[in-house]
Length: 431
Image (cartoon, rainbow, N blue to C red; front, side, top):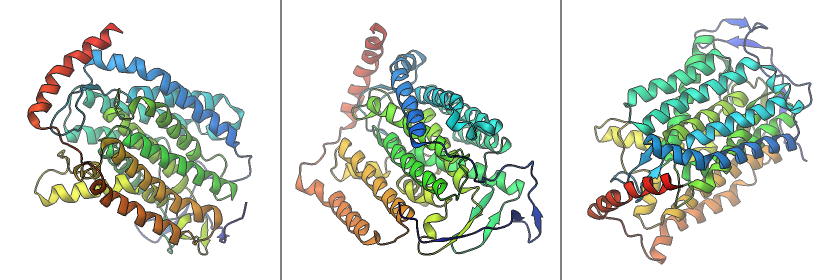
């Protein structure tokens, strides 16, 4: 494997406080910043954990589907959603079980003994995951207000910060490192969790869209974290790669039940859970790296910015939604039918093809990140740019080459809602 063309300059572990220019040393009992020197977990170990997460999630989902119906966590067709059949939406519970199952298996493996040595941090992630899933699941069963949901996400972020899972170092490309004070670290951590969870939640509007997007993103970040570990940029005891592979596993296990036509939705519980897991893995890698880089691949080794590129599709969708709703004078949390996936269907793409297009954009952005990370070269800009141009042409022009998508009118939608809601419940109870 060719090493990238960059140089590493070690830097004393001093904090440059965002509240001033004073420098204070980081004490030994403070939250850890990763160090090298111990063997890294093998790739087969990561694949095993991901497989456990996938198998457990896949196996538990049918049971969760039936329980969702009994508890009333069912999404009925309405004018804001594109599905036309009442569908259970408690799939996040199966994802949570998959996360816990994979975590327990990893805790028993010798490969992850160093990663699991920080028990408070690792258990803090599990607790925060349970908290944010609970908030989402309550909203799936009976809708709660937007402030209450935000408060739950803030609570989950606070749990992470209190247990040591936080952003300690903030790196801006071509500028010096910024070591965050405890107060600012907690604030940035909560905002990071809030942003990631919201982005995943907003893009969860089509069957398989959020699950597939996060699967691609988490798989990409897993490879990115492993590359940094191989280069001794982060210590092998960094938990970021482990959480990324668990996230990948639960998405892969859930997708067979969730691709169009979906038999179950992940719901807010699942979307918020995936957002938190992505936040944890990215913070663990990007928020603790204290080494500086120079060379043509510098930007690609600003780890805290990498997830912003990989998750460009849901993040842009979130930003557009905020600007759009603010411009109309409405509440930024008010739901609408103007997201990227809605726009794709409006110009003529079918349900499955709209999802595939957004998956392809996520994969393209991921390739844009991974190639220079592994090669240290920027010569992929041109071919990736050509691929992006071709995909943009396909996105815009393909509906004109084929038949358009017929939208269901409101009268038909109400009829479908009335006829399918009770039918789904009765059929599931008979199973």
